Length: 259
Length: 259
Image (tube, rainbow over all chains, first blue to last red):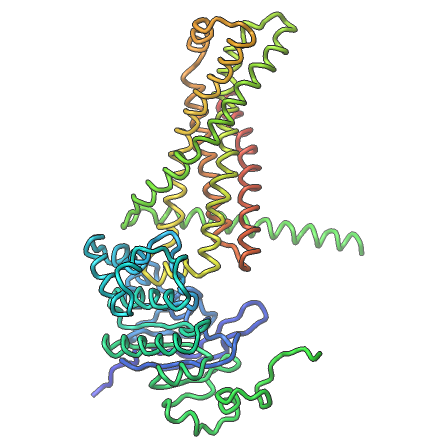
């Protein structure tokens, strides 16, 4: 009996920007229905990894498979089809300024799924309600929202198209701890309810512990530790230990100019 | 050594020019080649036509009326030397329809629309809104770029038609008020002299200018980098390059059409 392929399988992924080699042979498997969080310092290539999977960046080398299908250098129309099963919550929300909140949430339904505006608005209002936002918010412009509300609208937009894979890019960055906790709870709720595969990137350990089934640490372009969230405190890895405890001293050297 | 340095600089500049030209050609190719595949964004085209045409009317109208008025004043001074003041209506009709209407409208729209497109798309780029479009299975070339290009090509000629009428009216007012022209005689001379080909050629030129303005706005915005500063730079570049290209294209189109 052959087992099903991982939902996302990444092998030997390389990506450089000029002389800056960001990803240097990254390997990662994400199983169906799993919530994986990638942790790592700023500038270690977490966002680059997400963008490579989504096709926003083209890797220099390596393979990315979704449901066993190679997606690197996929044709444009095939990629559009593939992206219909993805949802993405961007770090800053990335809401469209020129559209009202409900239009942002309904955007993918109208443009990519061809749903009528009236019907799409109904779905958008349901999704907004599921992230705790009422119909009055739906008529506002994104500029009128607070940071936490923008994240919630971004989350509603990410789940609106009933995706089976959702990416979360730094979901709690810039939020106060209470709002961060609320967003994390909404993420966990959405992931469980929709039974989706989730990949999140963050350097907020409290958030990572709340939303992850499994954690992986990215350092110098590779996954240097990977395991269940319960095992991370027992990880026999000095890099992981330094990162999760936020210690200034350790093997990870930050480039900080001395005064 | 100085000669080698100068040659190296020349080579680098030439290579950069080739790179920019190639990137622009690819940009146009991507925008035009994908436009013919559904979905079609008619709503976005309509919105852009209103932005470019309707909202540019005051600025283009003001420019045209004063251009016509100044033309009447200057023509009177120049033609008086040959006792040919009676030719003012012909001079105004000829200059406005062939040159001043299209070029002034093009430059005004470059300032207003080129800048606003570069700023809008540039902001979308740096705030990840363009990435968000891709993740929502929406091609940004089809959704953002092509509707603007099409609206520019279609709307600017209509705007120029209005500018032609207003410009000739400006000349009419000054001629009648300051030079005691008979109003009926002025209109009759303009009507008799006006060749439909002049008007059409002016509109064809303005169509090319519309393409240039919207292309530069979209291109500079699309590739803007580096936050607010990058968006500012893109906006400046859009206006400057569009203005220069309009004047260059005007020469070649005039040579092609009127010789």
